[in-house]
Amino acid sequence: MRWKLLRRRLSVSAPRVTVRSRLPWPIRWLVLALMMGGSAAVAVWTYEYGREIAGLGRDAGAELRLLREEVERLREEHQRAVSVANAADSLLTASRTAQEALAARVKVLEVENLALTRDIGFLEKMMPAPTDNRPLSVRGLQLQADGPQRLRYQALLMQALGQPAGLKGRYDLVLVGSSDGKPWSQTVSRPNQTIDIRQYLRLDGVVEYPSGVSVRQVEFRVLDADGRLLVAETARL
Image (cartoon, rainbow, N blue to C red; front, side):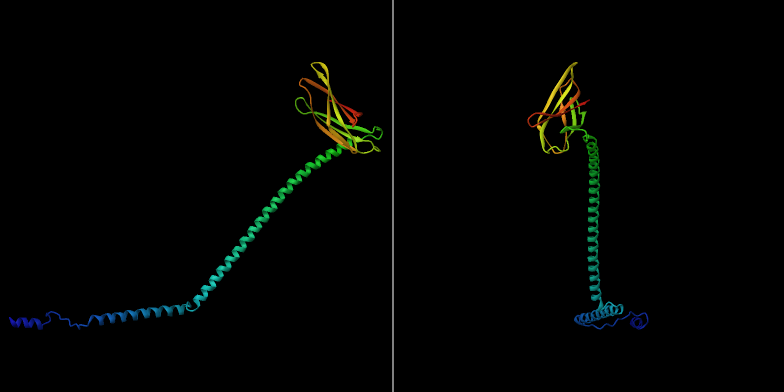
């Protein structure tokens, strides 16, 4: 029996035996720390060596500064471009506004020019004839309906040549017509409408008359400051 046990221990089928050296745990931790420190040192060296090979060593800070300066320069150029664009937009708006104002002014001038042309034609037509020896004449007496029982009148007073300027006075309107088949007349005095003639004077206004009256003609009378009749002119409707 003993022989069998001895043979089993000495044979190939005998159990394996591991021989271990027992080290204290502080030495084990120290060895592990040294190994990790060595690995970290190798990793740092590899990283720095790779940066030097790639050109990212000492010049990386300078490149970063250059990039920042370039970004700042581009930002300033962008701001200047925006300012120029805003100024151009403002100038364009001001130019468009000026053109619109100029076009409106041109239209106003065209209307004024048309009115002046009409006035010139009116004055030329109403110029006194050379044979007219009266000191004052009424030219271009015109009448026009301006609504129910309203009549608009227009006349031009002109002084003859050689008469002293500054003739003062007033004018009256005498409306003549019919009311209910009977003759009708009405004098519309304008005491507040004084006239101061210096060669010529244009007069216009509106006169009203009662309802049911049919006006056929209007007599325009000019009186001096003392109430003496200077000239009279009649116009029919």
